[in-house]
Image (tube, rainbow, N blue to C red; front, side, top):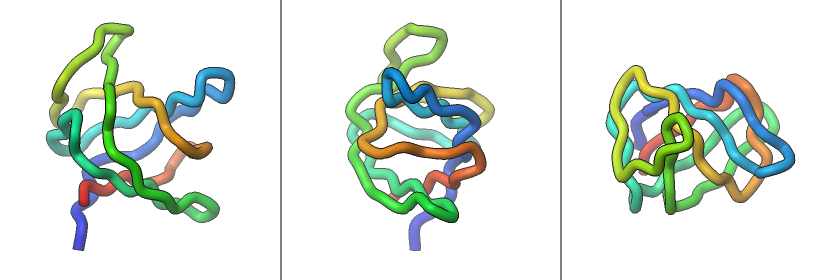
Length: 81
């Protein structure tokens, strides 16, 4: 089973970017699953940003912006596969 690594705190509809508050380390290239009451999809992390700066990895306690292939909602849980 995959481990929960974060939660969606915001979604920017116009640029299709979700903000994820991390509870664990996440790196570009990792595969994630986003799951919520109406959300359920998997994707590879192709890029992440913190304060508009591109980063290769991020850790617990940080909030990262990430392009997502489907709409995500506040409270959706993020799992590393």
